[in-house]
Length: 372
Image (cartoon, rainbow, N blue to C red; front, top):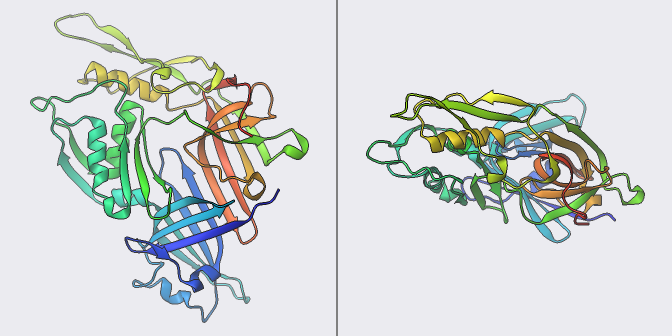
């Protein structure tokens, strides 16, 4: 079955509005890259000519100048999916000699770029990491950003008398640094409607409803163009360090907690670590912070990775990053639930394809059925 698709383009300064008709008519293709815990990017390609009105759009007072806000959304089967909410960072003009061969390429990043433009030095006396994250993100409410932070699994309450957390970095760098210290991620999720976003600071969410299954090896029921899996037995490691707790004069070994403390497994047979590694950089840190740091390094890698391409108009659904999806038809070792770690959207006037990356902590399906 082939579904119809409608693309929405909004532009503006702080509050985006529907793009001028001349801009929409000239839009040739859209490329959007999204990944869990990373800055997302977009690229818009416009067809231009010698007398094109787009010449003024790239000027300082135009709608395609640097730091202008851009929102890209699609409506598929009556449901709106916001693919990107970001700001323009770069423009390129490709002037061709033949008629119809000139293009304007506009590149940008998601709204987290706004958090990476100014170095800040600020103290947060008595605030644990998740409240610091909410405080930082609250400063960007004018862009429709709502903070959502999750407390670490182990309590880390700084004593304002002896330990005052201080930020000496951009807001984005500080948010990511705090997230890495406790096994969390930080990213901005656009939507659910154009113009609003959620700044998420917390663990990767590996629970909830499944997106429609990616099907391969089932003949006419297939909805993916290709699907390749790889398993890396060296991706995971057990982390430990030596600690000396006064008044004792003997160091004891501290081992990082198991990953299930932070997230549930998606595999019937989670991979076992084949190597051990030292947990460095923990001198002077509390035991709680050391345990959280070790947990963060253990959950940073998944041994099983799947990569493929899907035709959205045939799939009937926009595969979303940060969620779960089922795989069927790939065999006993690779069927089951996966976390969608990255998606690249490729849109033209006639096609909409997604290149995706799936990850899991081991082999084998932990469920007998996935969502059709």
